[in-house]
Image 1 (cartoon, rainbow, N blue to C red):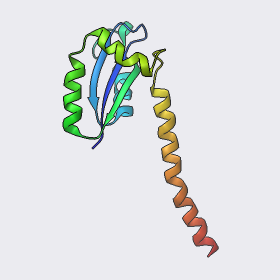
Image 2 (cartoon, one colour):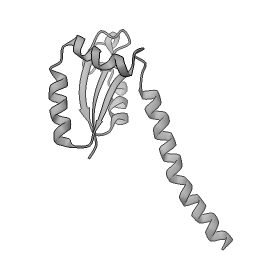
Image 3 (cartoon, helix red, strand yellow):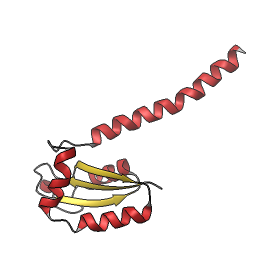
Length: 118
């Protein structure tokens, strides 16, 4: 089963929170719905700036433990090569998720058309 290691931050990049989850979009949505879970509203964690997809649960847990012990400069060193402007990666994930859902629907629609024609 796929697991994700992620780093999420607030709009001012003051806090870097490392997490582990199996569904990245649901996790980000949870952070949006619970704005004051970890901090006050001014420091709401709402910007996904880094994530890794890992196929093994054991490897993901190991990686999570390692990244959780990193200092802030080490975390920034992970983020900057893949996301130099610290943009919110949720936008791309939402777009990719929408594409995936649309391609799954097309074969079913084509099969119905073929059944009507035949």
